[in-house]
Image 1 (cartoon, rainbow, N blue to C red):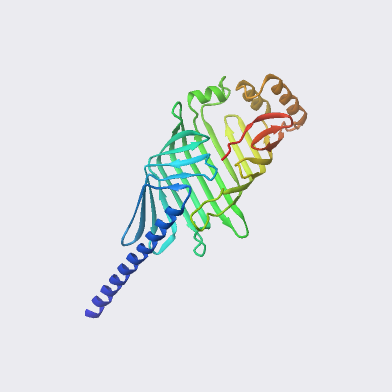
Image 2: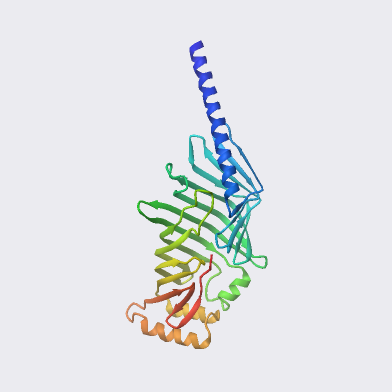
Amino acid sequence: MPLIVITILLAVFGYTAYWHYAARVLNAEISAFLTAARHLDVEHHNLGGFPYRFDLDLTAPRLTSASGAVTWQAQQLHLHALAYRPQHVIAVFPREQIITLGGIPWRLSSSDARASIISDAALPAQIDRANLVFETLEFTDGTALHSADSFRAALRQQENAPHQVAIELHGLRPGPAMRAILDPTSLLPPMLTRLALRGRIDLDAAGSDGSTHDPVNGLEITDLVMEWGDITLEGTGRLRRDSLGRFSGDMMLTTAQAQLVLDVVEQAQLLLPDQAQIARMLAASMQDQESGMLTLPLQIRDSAIFVGPVALGALPVF
């Protein structure tokens, strides 16, 4: 019996010594990383979690993209990892966050927001798998409130190939002001049922000194789907991103509801009258007469979207 007690005490002492040693080393690495990081600001950090986990609490974190066009900030962020598997990190976000896009701050709240990140054990800066989930979303730019049922994103590494990416947004309900812009004559229902993207994304890893590079080099879209009322849009494409955050490439959009799409676009005044007439002529000439299916080739040049000579809008620059 004394031998069993001694063995247990030695095991407890050994594990305690391991945890505190690992925590000191990890805390030193975190401090060095935060000091060197050029695009991440944190007011204060605290490491705890003994005996089973490493719990990192970040106070007032602020993350800025390399181009400066996108920022994320919150009052706090909690990161958790099991002591025996530190390469698997769980991030728990606060109920409220602020994301700034193109100089416009969006305040986002969610009933449940968390992420899971698994890095390569041999290359900690290399993401092997990642998942992001937001449930029961509300977001506002200060003038209009929008909501959605859920947002999910997943990233998975492929051997010697770009990462696989999947993004889904369900139950998007634009605010009244946005609805008046997008669909002023109520041709569509109040809720966009589903917006989904699947493909492969070419990423740059973070620098070993804690610095970050422009993360997205390119995107291959293998499956893009939007379902809103009677409209279903599907698409594929390939885009490259330059050092200024602008995208260029080609996309193909397909829909069987071409006339309804054009009605919505025209009613929303996204095209000038002359442009709308040209768009209808192009659609009529390109539409399959038997199936009614329209396949629309898009050209993206420096984030501006064109169908032939007609400009349809622009992608965000980040």
